[in-house]
Image (tube, rainbow, N blue to C red):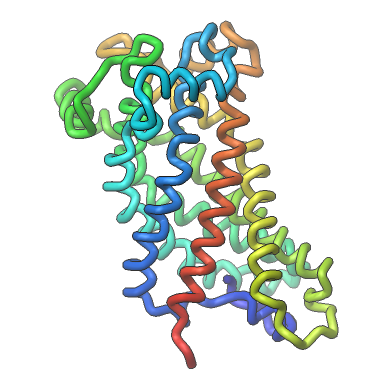
Length: 323
């Protein structure tokens, strides 16, 4: 997936497909369909996580399973997909921006760290981390308004939150009350949450892959010359995705909890500041309150990350242009 250093054995290099070897048009078109499918499968986890993070103390003490039961009882399966239409509408352009920035930045990042002569996992962690953070920064301009609207739909009518007729209704009311800047509520915290999260995810993914490959005998010091099988490649990528999800969720859940509450809680002039959200969390649950929804977030980031990366790597193989 990254530009291989000249010291890397050919067998390991064959597990990766570089950006300049892709049919970009096919990559974007087919990718939109594949990632939409992944989003359909994993979206309910985001709904559950969001409800846990913004619920009152009594409700927050319930398990994720109880939240799911409540949603199904009150709204049926459609309740698990509140805000889905809004997310899908914004996901395609946001993902195009993210993936383009990720791959193009990664090439430059590897060239930047090459003179440092670091070991391969460290080099991959730094380059992938830089690329992940940069890609997240670029995509936030599209993602944050979608995030604000979709999260309000996820929690509407729940724990005292307002109800809406759809994403357009949410956006219209926000703009009417706060102007366009209302759609960027929590933008700073979103950048502080998603950029480090993206950096941690891609850094962990890039470095863990290389550690695993070295363990399997495909490292830079290996004498192996045959390319690993497709099943082995998929296995390593899946394990890397799980490790990356666990790392990123552990690091960024506190900021995600603050951001989510800031974006959806409060009405009109009573909307809380980030400082007040922090105080309320500590008053209600102590420092453990910052880890509300850690379980669903961990599952979401691991499941989403693994599914996304396997889909992403499959997409790159599918769209690779033969020399």
